[in-house]
Image (cartoon, rainbow, N blue to C red; front, side, top):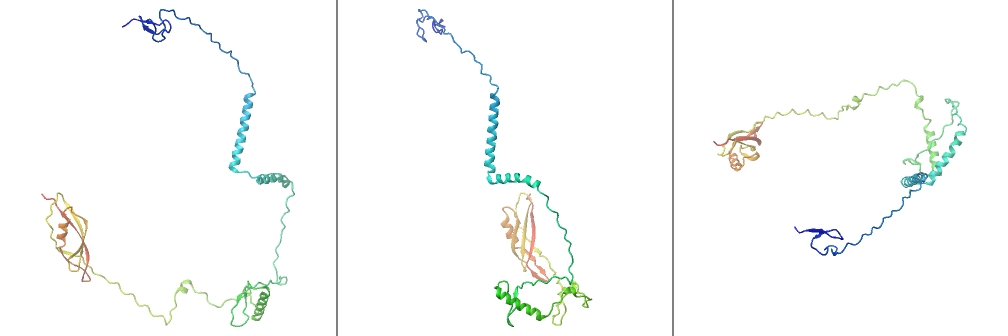
Length: 294
């Protein structure tokens, strides 16, 4: 390793035989320049002025600002109506007057005296709602929409007809026992009365007893089917009156062998179902189990 020395000016390590520093380009044969140290003067510390009222003033200003902000936000949220404020002030001002006012007078006690015949008040004529007919054969008309003169004439005609018919009898003044029989009970009222014109009801027909039999298989060839495991096919057959298979519904099939099984089932023969001895169409369900070939 080459010998090293430090530069006389910058102090960096350089080659021991170098004449000039490759960093600062200073000739190593010359003496380094003298370093002039400049004194660093710092400003003297001046403590802040001691003002005890400053925190209190800042706290008061912050409190006032918070109150103003809360009032402005409440005004925007709830709205401000000068009439409501004035009405509230009027109510507050009028409340002392009400408190000093005299109490209301006590309620008067009124005694009700029943009216007898001698002290009876004159009857009030009730207004009419339908005008009586002016001539025989006519119908009464609505009197609520008539003019004043026509209404007066209709009222006079109604009063004359009422007088001609005689005084009306108040049903509350009728006394005595009733000779009529008591009203029939509800069951008797709802029961229809028998008259000679009512035709007699026909007697209900007796229920027919139906004797029904199910189809009976007579010929059921099964095709030769090869399966790896025991498999069951479920079929729903429609047997006609002639004992032949008319329709086949497959509930569970044998994969790959369904068509062969259907062709075999179509050749089956049955003794048809009967209803009161008459052959009829009926449904027949059958489960065909094919065992695994050994």
